[in-house]
Image (cartoon, rainbow, N blue to C red; front, side, top):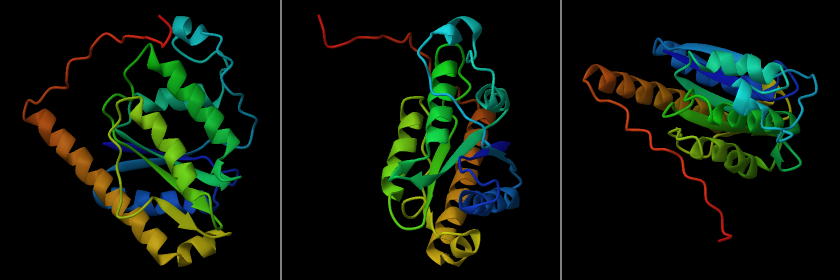
Length: 209
């Protein structure tokens, strides 16, 4: 089993990375492979609603989004992490996740019923708004949301500060343990012959009749 952890911060080994690393350690203890994927600092375009992903099966902008989407096919679980920028998720990870989930939603089931979690990193505030924002991607893609004993957040202006956030680090560890437990339960269910629920044809409606 493998979990992909996404670092949506501008610093490769900054505060968000520090929190994700704590989760990865717990997953590794449970013999679950991990990879921390940094989205980098190159500009990431937002979705332009061109619809080409319906035809091509991937985003028309062939960048880090498509690179990550390929990795997702072999992954069993996900953790998406973002620093807080102006009381919300970073612009980079927002564009990244908009295009990732939209471009894969019509042509594949690479996220369906795979567990996911969101974490937020901040010096002071804006963490709960960021946490809520990221969780919405999972709810619309049939992804079970893994929780911890409190909102998934850490505080600090530097990685060293984050390491001193004892409660935040504990929350990350518990999150890792809970993710491992869920993945093992899922695996046990498959071995016992429990199949995935039947996929219904998606219906699109609006409020104008």
